[in-house]
Image 1 (cartoon, rainbow, N blue to C red):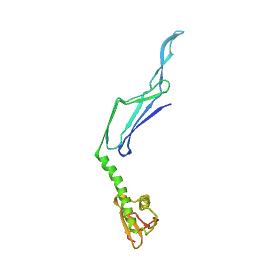
Image 2: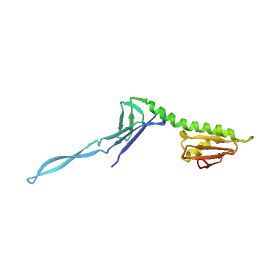
Image 3: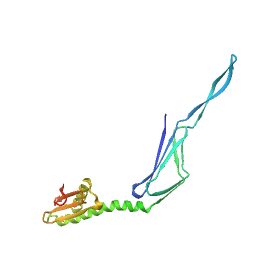
Length: 189
């Protein structure tokens, strides 16, 4: 059973979401054309030909979460030479404010963590060190997130005496030295 699958993606601006339209064309169906004939006094049914009809289409559309969309004039088709066409007269999207808040919360946590790490690292950085605080802060934040830390719940502590930066969210804890080398730590130790 041969199926033709088309996929059209209309990229959305907010949160990298996308609208996906998928259409599957089912194969044509051959229907016999039959006639009743009499052979040697007996009635028999014979096929006199075939009529080919479309197998139809199965189409789906997926919209991103928290978005209201409208598609007008959607046409999808396949020509006899196998050329596929998709047409859309109008497309409109109204993004819910919930999506904006969700995306802002996701990114703010990480940005705040990197900023806090940069500030903490700058306080423990040894004089004359060539390491950029921003690069080390990114490294610290990445190490914390890779260990399962939640940037939105994190707190960053600089210890000038021990020359360390500690990042914790209550369950994940890391400690990094003045060179940016990080290790896991135990909360409260």
